Image 1 (cartoon, helix red, strand yellow):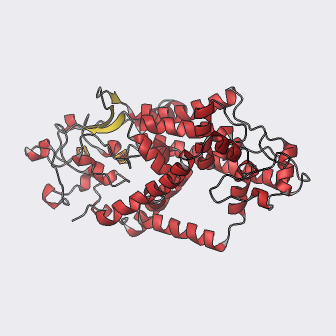
Image 2 (image 1 turned 60 degrees about the horizontal axis):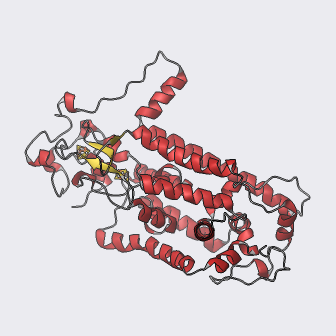
Image 3 (image 1 turned 90 degrees about the horizontal axis):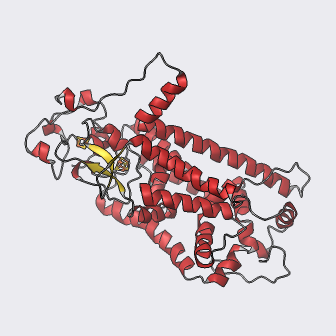
Length: 414
Ligand code: SF4
Ligand code: SF4
């Protein structure tokens, strides 16, 4: 029998007796040795203490205490703040596009550089160009810094970007939680279907990654400074603003699938997630289970949105782990499931994980601002020129091959 949300043991008072638990493989020594098997009977001294938030203190102290003690409150706060930031970027970009489309008649609103975070392929080319030449391009420099920040986060904290910051990840989470509330459970595809589907995102990433690997410095420069790349963010915005029926239905279908299957897009199709999953193998901070104190209650496995069998692992190495801390939060036993440094086994408190996520992102994007690499070098006048010619062949995607531009053409590389 497969574990499913229908068997959810979220409330410790509702714990099933051990015999009624779904199939469990690799029992922890504590359970195998016949120690306490249900949370109900757990010695109170072994229980994780519940946080207490004193009433007689200022609201901001209570807020700080809650952010420190409740990792899921911290995570939801960061997710909400990031979604609001993306909405703000979207509104600002739409006003910028209105100015450009009106040929400068509407009021000018500067293009928000954060929009470049939605151009990961262009950012990958910028990264390779930077590594090979030491030059930070002036077309989408903030996209490069955002990618470096997200990669640094993955190398240190596994795919924490997906569960803490990514707006698509937040939407996916909201959708499967909605599905769980309405239908009582989400679907878990069987292994024979799940594994091939999970490999799809790696195939998609390989397609993009290998294409970029084959490009040499002149090719990279030609693409980065091409008219197409200069307006890639504008084209993307217009694509969604004037979305066609086929694209709209595709998005609706993915959203519907995400209601039933947890994180459908992220788990099976997102090539960005594949890149971060590959980088996350290097991460020294991993969910770590203390098998000697584990009571084998499986609450961690049931809490995991990535369907990882946490209760059978000593360390979670899976490329699907997003460091969401839901398993850590769900574990009822003190000092049993934590984030630890793989080599030294040093425990890293949950609030430190959250602070590192925010700190790395703010730190690296802040560095771009401080060093003058946040805004690009495309002037208002040049943008107006681009807006007027958006439909010309010069601005079309060249189906993977690097286009050739005459030096005299508008938007050609310097
Ligand atoms: S193993 Fe834990 S931290 Fe990793 S995805 Fe599952 S619940 Fe989140
Ligand atoms: S690690 Fe914690 S939540 Fe997971 S099975 Fe052991 S005691 Fe239960």
